[in-house]
Length: 78
Image (cartoon, rainbow, N blue to C red; front, side):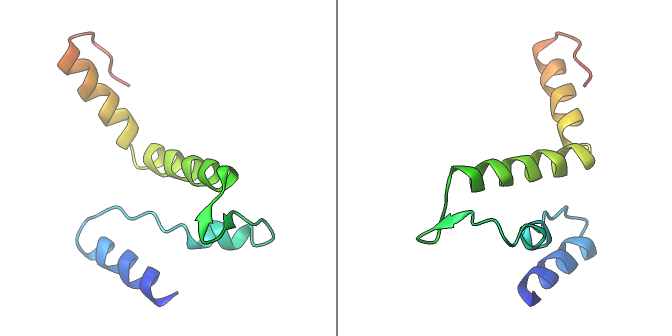
């Protein structure tokens, strides 16, 4: 817990968004996403969903799409 709390605290103090996956993994403690210390495909899928949700909640996806649209000149604004 302490390393995650320190990282989240550092991010908050410095205006850096931090995705702490520990709470999400703990909510699903009965699901084994690892084999031999590596994520299995279901683990990758779980983390990908968490990451997309985090990026969407933080507005990062909208901004990236808007920037990409502006660079390509297609008027995409997310």
